[in-house]
View 1 (cartoon, rainbow, N blue to C red):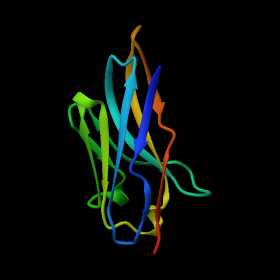
View 2: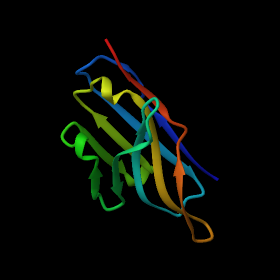
View 3: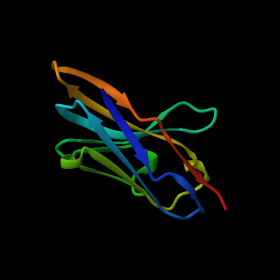
Length: 120
């Protein structure tokens, strides 16, 4: 069984910074892609950023320059550094991983989500 556990969410003032972490654990052979998505109230879930095992990154165009994704392959952990936060960044942030489990099964897995609220 695979688990993705997020941490680091919370309340932050406009202009502030926050770092999210997500650790994957369980029966994992290999993690191909890790990343973050977010869902604001009454909106669809949207891509924030992804990173491959080789370090290639992909960002939502609107977030480039403010958000930075990184990864520690040895720890099966992905991070999201968020700077210059504003109210539009308020959302539940979900960790994502595309990985391989024993038996050569490859699939998509999601964390439970962590709330980020930007407010004064």
